[in-house]
Amino acid sequence: MLFIGDVHVYVSDMALALRFWADGLRLEVAEKEITPHSGFARLNFPDGGPSLRLLGPVDPWPEGLRPPTGMYPTIRFDLTTSEFDDVLVRLIDHGGSQIDEIETYGGLRAVTVADPDGNSFELLEIHGEGESARGGLG
Image 1 (cartoon, one colour):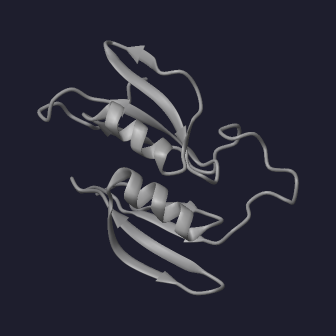
Image 2: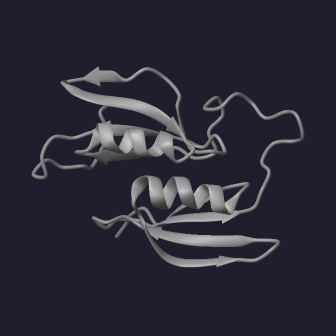
Image 3: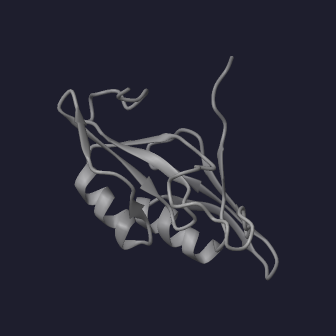
C-alpha cells in the first residue's frame, strides 16, 4: 500500500495561519496546541484525505531576504473545489493572495494562491460532485 500522509505547512504566525487555512477553507481543527514558543494544529478536510498540519512559528527566510510571494514555495499541492469563486474570495479575505491570473484548461479554472507566509498551491475547479477530484489539470 502507498498513499500520501499528512501535508506539513510551516508558518510564522499560528493565529494568522489558522485564520487562512481553517477559516478560509472551512477546515475542521481536529487538534491544536499553541504555546508562547511553538504550536501545531491538525486540520481535517470535510471530504477526507490527508490532514493539513500547521507547524510553527518558523521564519524560513533570513531577515530581509524573503523572496517575492509564490517564487519559492515551501510546499506544493492542488486543492480542488466545486465552489471555486467562493473559496478564492474567502482565502483572499482571510489573508491569502492570488499569485497569477486565473487560467482555464478544458473549461475548468485554475489559479495559484499563497497563504500569509507565501506558501503557494493551486486552486482547481471541478464541476459537480460526481467528478473525481484526484489529479490535477496539468
